[in-house]
Length: 204
Image (tube, rainbow, N blue to C red; front, side, top):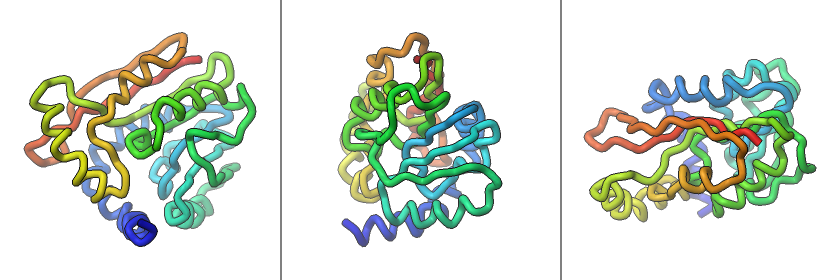
């Protein structure tokens, strides 16, 4: 698994470039909307870094050593107070009510326990703070769910852990946010199959 994770990290930016033009508007709606003391859960190789214009200081949690190596190289190009923390979203090493904003971008499909991560995000947010998220989620239609079910094992292997069939929207809805705003839509990445996506924010 270590070799596959290294390979995935090495080629992540190249693979991501195929769909990045489709994702940029949602980076603006998540990282771009964050402000104040900000936490990004699952920073990967740092694709969101150019969009954190109002976030300062910025803390990025990334558990994967290969992704952190890429991230460490990239943060040097930004004139901002940025800290990189080796940790998992399920056990964030921060006090309650610490951050003004928390951001995830195509991360909750990769974590071990979505519910724990979202509850941890809620815990570390200050009262009135915002959780900005852009994720893919389970399809609403029977045919879409069936396709996700069939593709899921192959997709998990190919991406070293991305789950297609997770009901991420349902899990976010079950969290105790005082206000939740989101858009649910199908993203077309140039192939006949569209992917159900959500973008939004939850306020503590």
